[in-house]
Image (cartoon, rainbow, N blue to C red):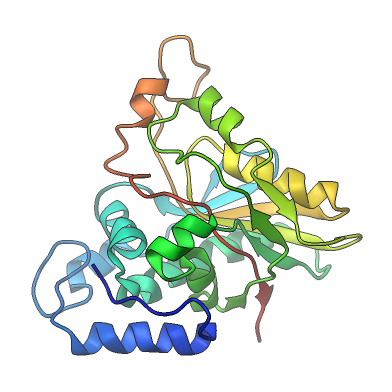
Length: 254
């Protein structure tokens, strides 16, 4: 488990301390376990982004990579193992997906709203994972959403996820006329992003595009439409969601 820091500490200082700890403490590759490297050259090469369109949200969506193999292991190491030393490469990948999503939009100013993590997930991890990735991508979060308590999404099927996600988010205040690109770490069924977008629209804002770090591969289950896993299959995603939460929001910097 990685080092913990106080959530009340300013984010830039907290991020710097976590990164410094990763350099000083004994380390193994977050992707394959090779010694003395935060990410070995082979695993780093596996994280080179190849953005692609995703058809699981109402808005145009782009993902940086599939959630599988090395990418899945490194993402889990960051989220559930405290491996903030892997955030640089993952943030670069997310930045490519954000650039692809924004490349389809006009030049109107937009903020990058990150799906916020539940309070329990933030306490457990000691860091806002998606907010960290967005900053590493060269953007800064707009904290426009708050998360309400809900069940963990792990092992839930499509309809269960939709029911569980309904009403999970609310805007922190009026968003009249503000336009957003919505960001999360891993896209599974799209129910979490749908509810986050609903909360933004309900507050008067708009979601023009979606960007995620990784997209799960979903098999067709009996009785499910194309592109969806069955309820039972959802829980088999190589450990994804063992400690899932939801995460936080951004603005372009520089």
